[in-house]
Image (tube, helix red, strand yellow):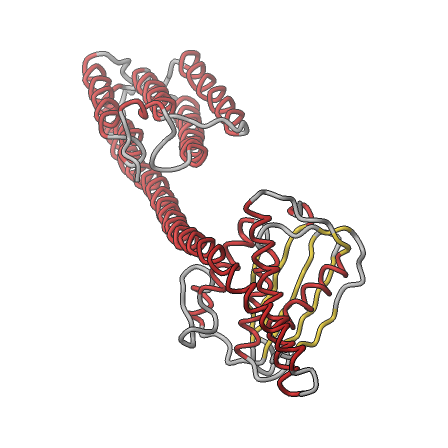
Length: 421
């Protein structure tokens, strides 16, 4: 967390997004305008209590225009500040105090509704602005004790009954408004906390991946020389034991493995120098990817269905490794064939990799790709899944885990065409 300085009083609201705050305040304001309009009609026309319709109507009209301006402002992609939200609350409080002035002052049973902006500020703004709004509300209430226009009610008994009924209705309105705003605020705060928690988890995962990437770069630099030695030695041994089918085949396999590792290091060095990957036809790229994986995993069996699509495709950074990670994990999990299906849709490339392994528990599915775990020490769905998830997230793609009918897991990798270089 970064400490907030005093200058940030004029920056973005720190509790909730400004659009959410202003939207909820607009809903409360609209309900109060409607309530005042109904109350004025009921008193003046229904109970024949004369009211200054012209000034009260002008105030309601101004508040209505202010509400329309607020609704238009919410359509703009402009961030709000604490001061802006405070200004809205002060405007609402002032308009409410003027309406109360023309309708009996503190004798108006609805005068306590001036507490609503203070309650909203208490759950939305910093303490200094809450106390400022509370002081303004107290000042208005004090002025209304002495300066107000009394209601012209001739019958004291009727006036007392109207006051009691108004207090009861005021209680219902106050409770409803406060409950509406506070519960919505708390729900939004809980959602924000969940988003922050997910962000912290992603940041922690990314920090681990960055540390792993640094170690991998150092290891790759050190591995270049021994790999070249292994490849040369394996080539010489393959020629020496060319007449021995068993030893010769093993030496050739070892040479291919060393060559594949050297190719990986070469691509890693090219990425480090910001060289753009060469675009290949999609079907050729998929075929080459599976061939490289078969060299690395000669013990695994794969049943593939590839899309016959020849459009140019340049894989984003780490995308090949992400698919290889999923293939390796599927091969580790299943004793049978790994199924690989690639479909080139109109909007995205979709790759399904399926196995017949033990699958995932609900807890593992919820944490897959977010935290590091493995069902088998040193193998399985651990760092590989976290790396794959982070790579796809950075590339604008997605990864989804589903259960297969008959047992096993299906991993769906989706990469939108717009995210390819």
